[in-house]
Image (tube, rainbow over all chains, first blue to last red; front, side):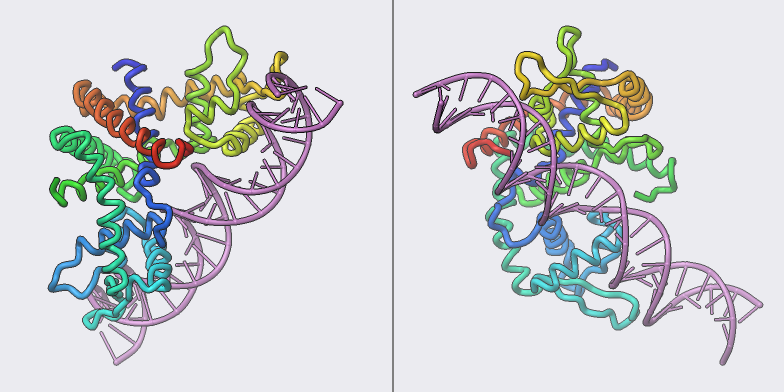
Length: 154
Length: 154
DNA sequence: TATAATAATTAGGTATACTAACTATTAGTT
DNA sequence: AACTAATAGTTAGTATACCTAATTATTATA
């Protein structure tokens, strides 16, 4: 494959790497990675479960557990999430949104998510799906490769 | 547009954000951002010019000048680039690869670039071009938007 | 000549995520 | 039952990748 195309792809990926700042509302009270944690918490929380385990959050967000701990600490200090301990296994902690956190997510809907939606409307549904499909393909290839190389830790 | 699709896109973008580490060779002697600087330096260097100005590098890599300064300092200390001063304007500094830096770029070709190429071959030329096209569309939309919001500095 | 603009740097700080080592608890083995 | 393994989470310390504000040196302009 052509050298130029390879380089174009690198440039493309580089340009996308810091996408969060494009959508970020500067006045937002929490950091981007904290917002992501809340979003995934909000989304992956079913009615029947009390909260999500830090280790699960780490898998969803592809972050190591100590990283999750410090994010949850920060969010807990600010009052957006709370930790409750699991009765069945006292090693386990469950993280869930507080009301304050839930309200913040409504704000996220109106700023971050709205901006993403706007962008998607510009590029169109078809291209959006294509983008998701192709990147998914890239990721699945790379994840398999990573597993073969080093046992899957990343 | 559907909430789910928006969320899928976020997830997709999140997964791509740290793409560099997928291709990274752990034994490589320089950091990822340093490697990027060298790659763009290598690529944007014509035969007729002595080097590239830090300010130009900043535009290409979308980094602020102080960031470039510290990258160039580090690379210069390690012997991969050198600074030469412009005769026409003594405020200006030109950065160029040393032989050592040039040799390192050959290594980059054989590791980082080779891995990217491999991935591209897996996903196929057509999808690669689609990916580049769609992300380009996203970026152009967002860059215009960013300019409208805050005068274009980022 | 004085002032403004430009190029790069210095100093200091923030955000993000890591590894290694530790504590507490549970599961499995003898 | 006691001992050892494994597992969940945390703490402490570190690396990386950026940034802003202020400073220095030089050139352009009024």
